[in-house]
Length: 352
Ligand SMILES: C[S@@+](CC[C@H](N)C(=O)[O-])C[C@H]1O[C@@H](n2cnc3c(N)ncnc32)[C@H](O)[C@@H]1O
View (cartoon, helix red, strand yellow):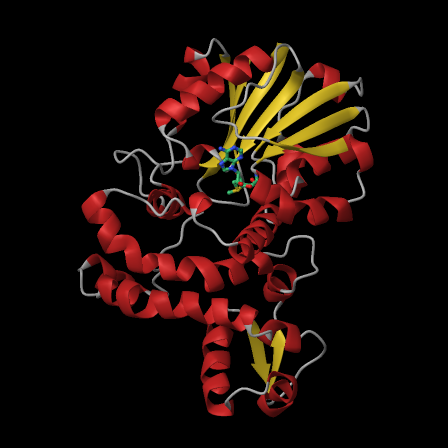
C-alpha cells in the first residue's frame, strides 16, 4: 500500500510523467493542512458531533459552538478527504470515519489523533534543530503527567488499528497454540492490548507487561477496563536496566519500543530476552520498518523513521538490523510477517 499522487486520466498521467506537477507544493502547502484538519476535527469533537444521522452545518454547530465560517471550511476539506459525505446540505460521516475516528470503535485511532494534536505537533518545530544536532526530544525523560496520559491514550489507539491482525497472524509456539500453560513478557507493554488479545484467545497464557512507572500509572486503568484479572499484569521496570530472568517465558513481545533504543541498547535487550526465553520460545519485535534506501520508496516506514529519530534519537531499523540483534543473541531467524492493513509494518520473529 502506498500514499501517492495518483493521476485520474491519461492527460494527468502524462503531466506527471513530464514532470509538470509541482509535487513539493502539494507536500509543503497541502499535506500539513490535511494533517492538522484531521487533528483539530477529532480534538474539537467534530466527528463525534456528526455521530448520529446527517446534519447541516448549523446543526453540527449547535453542540460545537465554533465559528461557522471556519467550521464550513474545515468540513469542506474533511469531505474532500473522505471523512464526510455531503448531500442536500447535510454532512454524514463516511464508514471509514465512523470506524476510525469515533472514540468507541475497537479500531478507533481517536486517542492517537488527540495525542498528536496536543503533544507531538509541536515537536515538528524541532526538526531543524534535530537535523543539526542529531539529538531527539527524548520525551520519556521530560513528559508531564498530563502528557504521559495523552501518550498512553495515543498508544492504545495506535494499537487498536493493528491488534486484530496481530492476534490473527502472530506466530506462536506449539505450547501456546495447543492451549497449554504458557507465559509471555511484553516489554514496554503499556495498555497491554497485544497481550490481552492473545490471552483472550489462549486462556492458559499469562502475560507480564513491563513498563516505566509513569506509563503504568496512566495505563493501569486502561488495562483494568479489559477485566483480565491476574492473567495480564503490569510490572514496573526499565528494560534497559532490569534482568528478565532465565527460561521464564514462551513468548517475548517488544512492540514499538526498539525505535526508542540505540542499536547497542537493542542488542543488550535481545541478549536478556534470549536468556529469558524457554527453548523454542519466540521473540517478536513488532515495528515500523526502515526501508532500504535501495529498495522502492515506502512513505510510512521512512516517515516514522524520521519521526522516531526526532522524538527518540534512535529511529526505525531495517529487517536485517533487527535480525542481526536476534542472531547475535543466539536466536534463530524464524519469520517476518508484514501487516496487510498497515503499510511498512512487520513482526520480526526469532526462535530460541
Ligand atoms: C510507543 S509505546 C508502545 C506501547 C505498546 N507496546 C504498543 O505497541 O502499543 C512505548 C512504550 O515503551 C515504554 N518504554 C520506553 N522506554 C522503556 C524502558 N526503558 N523500559 C520499559 N518500557 C519502556 C514506554 O513507556 C511506552 O509505554
